[in-house]
Image 1: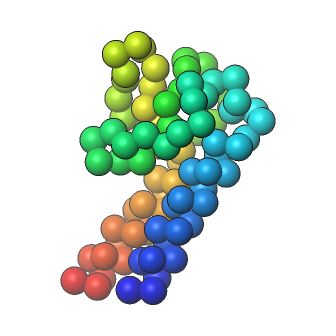
Image 2: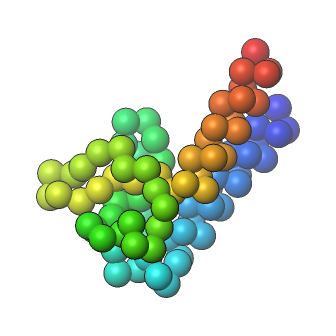
Length: 87
């Protein structure tokens, strides 16, 4: 249980660290974490792939991308394994 909570904290920290990245700043639509299809994502302009490895999971009505940074995706997979182990 402690490992799951610690991993959730790591996910949050990774998302906010990515939001503060100077390289990514020109591609951020805003400084918020967006929930899209039950996932915590960043809302990004096109071209972000030049500076961030991420999985795109959808598009907004305005044409922006909902993306999960690769570092966060790895942590989410770890969380899933921990939850399966717990159950």
